[in-house]
Length: 103
Image (cartoon, rainbow, N blue to C red; front, side, top):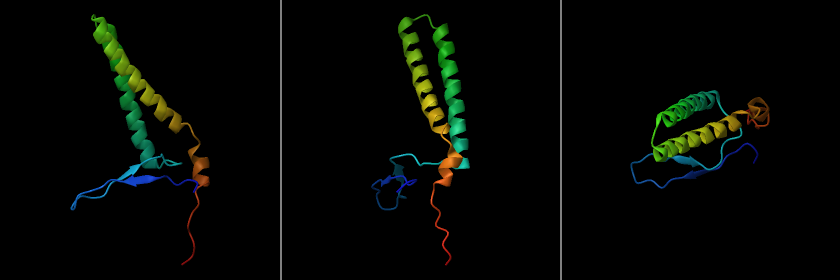
């Protein structure tokens, strides 16, 4: 089915709420999703800038390398989110079937 994403249910002990794990991302993002992603991208950008700053300040080459690698990790995560945001969400929303049958 186009536009439907798969989820996997975690096994829970009695009394726990069941939580679904998303195996593939949905085809579209809601407004709330976009706001969450925007916040995450802002945090990743700050983390990248901090890593860059502290790596430049660091005199120990081993520590500098570790900080640089952390900054690169944050940059990869930022770029991944950016790629997800660059699809045409409005076009994707138009492809989602609606079940608005009269009852």
